[in-house]
Image (spheres, rainbow, N blue to C red):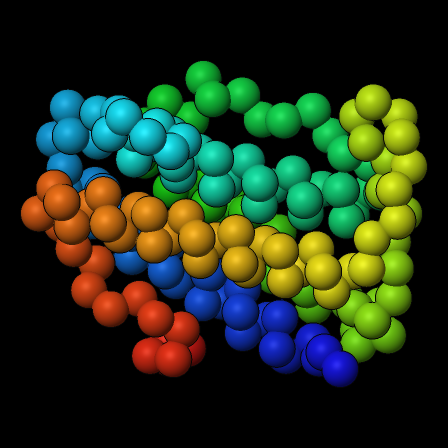
Length: 163
């Protein structure tokens, strides 16, 4: 049903779109970057942090079988710090996805939550969740950035071309 190349492509799109949005965010004034719009996860910075936290948290859970304590917002105080975090995460995800074959993607994985509860997930559903989670927040970021005069342009998957 699913293939390794399908998820590698979705994650490559995810990283390229995140990069594109971060480049737009880097053009904003500090006030615009940190301004809370009054809804959602908060500022543009807060939304990027939320995205990084989810990407890193789920990757570590897949690698270890254990949900880890979440990363701290104070460790990512700027757009540049988040860019570094996403760069590191991209590399880590590439390594993980290169180690996963179609059989593993079609299988299940037991994950232990930070509370100690064990839950069983379909591996592909976790990967699909992250791709869709990223798409939701990319769209929100694009809207917020466009309102601040920094449109990322068309970020639809259909127009994605691998580097």
